Image (cartoon, rainbow, N blue to C red):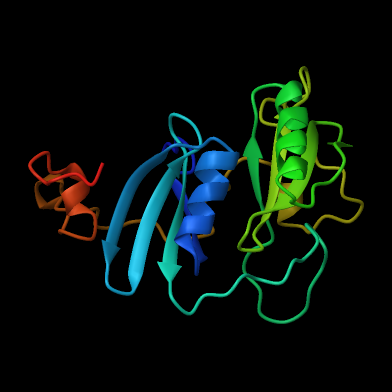
Length: 197
């Protein structure tokens, strides 16, 4: 079975990378750990923690999204509601609340969701952000729970992956055939490339 180790990166889009860097690096305190650029496009990565990153493409025609309340239903084509970033302790929520308010960003009150306490805001691109602190002793990963009044039959099958719903792999790729093809970002791993910093 595949073992996942987190969100490697979540890629968003911006029309103004400088405002994005000011917000994510300078206000929120996330290190800018990598950047790629070519005419008409930039791709930057910010470190959330030791295993998770958030990334942004800058495309010249991107405009900030109109603010949409976190979790509020919409109609029509839609992909993304909000990103929730975990914080180590509850005091971090209050520190973020104060920082965001002082910088002129709308920021919610701290909300008690039972298993997490959350704070909501938006980045300069209109991206809805939630910051969440896990309540000690309430671990939905260790003890999954479903309280929906009318869950679907598929949902009622439980939290564990259910076999038999997808075709099995009949011809796995042999290890000798494993090959990764060059893509964007090769320069990030090349110690001989001249760094901007």
